[in-house]
Structures are given as structure tokens and as C-alpha cells.
Image 1 (cartoon, rainbow, N blue to C red):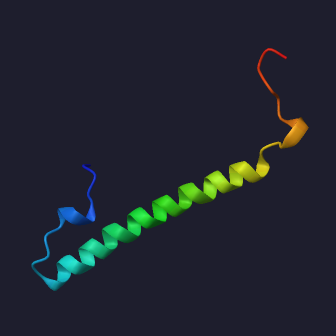
Image 2 (cartoon, rainbow, N blue to C red; image 1 turned 180 degrees about the vertical axis):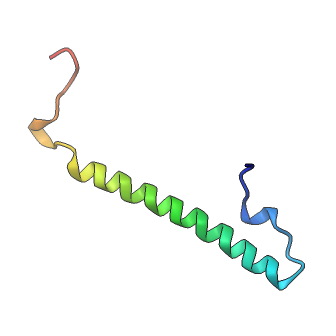
Image 3 (cartoon, helix red, strand yellow; image 1 turned 180 degrees about the horizontal axis):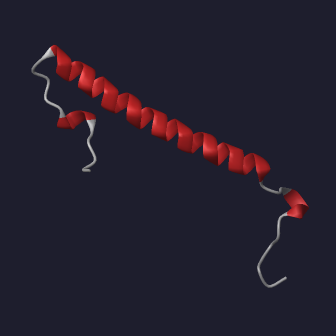
Length: 57
């Protein structure tokens, strides 16, 4: 499947507006899920002196 963006759908009918909104919402939800995963990862990561400085230690 080729990646679609909002600009790929020409606005000629009312249905096109709904199609564009669906593409926008899908992209937004994927982005929000990635941001949430990064935040979760960061929250679980060791901080301060607990984090290893390098692999050679």
C-alpha cells in the first residue's frame, strides 16, 4: 500500500472532505501512539547514576 497524505485527495465532493479527515485522523492517532510509547519508554528508563555510562565498564 502506498502512503497517502491529505494532499493526495482532491476536494471535489463532500465525501472527499470526509476521506481527508479520515486520513488525517489515522495519521494523528499513529503519531500520538508513537509519542505515548516514547514517553512510556522514557519513564521506565533508568536515570542518574543507575544508567550505564558505556559498554566497556
